Length: 493
Image (cartoon, rainbow, N blue to C red; front, side, top):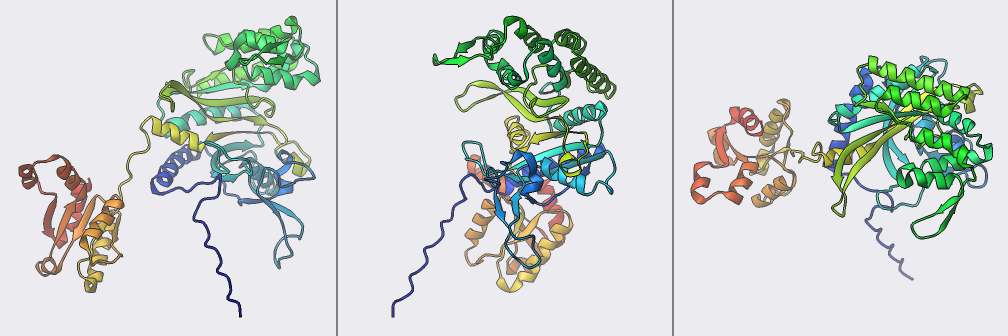
């Protein structure tokens, strides 16, 4: 009789495009998000947690329509499972936090307050090709107001974003919230007499202003240009006269908000929709000033053009203005860490009624990288005090010590490995980043004392001190068992 073949062992590896997070990474991200949540809470926003799984139908227009409903997301079809959904329905992991908000706003519209302010933080998944710094699972941090058409909601989001950046430790002067309005650009396109079939191409070329400058955008809007490799890039086909209002829009940034707004008024000419957008920006600027958000924190800036194909009104992004060294040792500005704006149609797919909304999304990994670059995160997270085990039969005594430390608010654990080799226990404490080790053998127990070993000081002495200095400041002290908590608190304090 043939023997069954052994099943190959599974590979212990993370799937491509995913990653594992360990203690310090998780702690730093949690602390940062907790600080942001405190700011959002103070502004009257409520937390919302939604399921990681949505129906593909609810995820909406951002997905392919018919042939491949699972493209771009991790999706599957329901099977005939008792108590489950309808067999054949497509389900998917959420790819952002906005689509679930649309579903919630429609599903609970009779129960939720209107306007509804919410913030959400959590992982999202995208079934896309991974690459350097591009993962298939990542965190998002969103805040949105659903149900208010007032630009006061946009101003509130911008002010709250500035407060959130300062809340995590970014200093004033190291960030700037920049604000624009899609209606202004619509007015510019109208003033330039851009045809509807040209509008998307014009938006695409406007987005290149930071890279190619005025003359480059002028060429791209009109007859075209050669790129750095010498290849020909076709232009949109506008005349230079048509391109004039577009360039005026891009160069409208003035010495202050008042000057910028005057320049934008000139750029939109007689366009009614453009004038409406400029007026909305004036209102936002006035409200931010009233909220104490000065122009060194949030400013009107026509250069904010990303996302204008999606947003319908005010649009904003938060940019970190300090410099860092890249992988080649060159100085560069850190750049954008958040973006958002006003959008229509959030709930309309579900209810048939337009529900105005505005919101912002913070790039969690990117903001955390910025905090590390500024030295505001990345410090060593202290491990627990480790109570070593000298006698297996006295485990209850060791657990009692750890319990006393924890009751005093001190992180502590008992060593639960093989206690035979004491050196391995200290190696374990070192790997855990423990600041202190507690030692009590039979002799100490009889005398009612414990040995408290300062591991941080001990490592420093071992690396730097002479024998005489080591003798004059020992890293291990003996204290009464009743003084254990006070001695540990003294060391780690």
